[in-house]
Length: 69
Image (cartoon, rainbow, N blue to C red):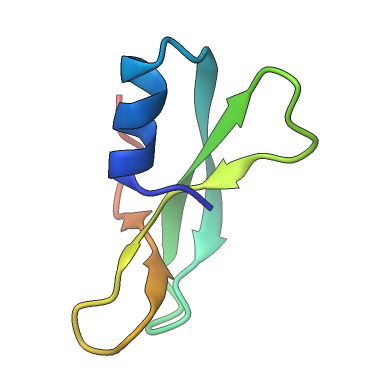
């Protein structure tokens, strides 16, 4: 997992990464949405973009209604 702030740190520290999107079902309404996956060099698995949940304690996966360009 990584937050937008974490990605900003990668940029600041000149850490190379790639971003891709995959389609998933929204657990709230079942609609197909997109999540952002980041891959850094040497990482064994991708990092999913997360944010602090506004309505509860914890985190949630950031979902997009359409694929960002």
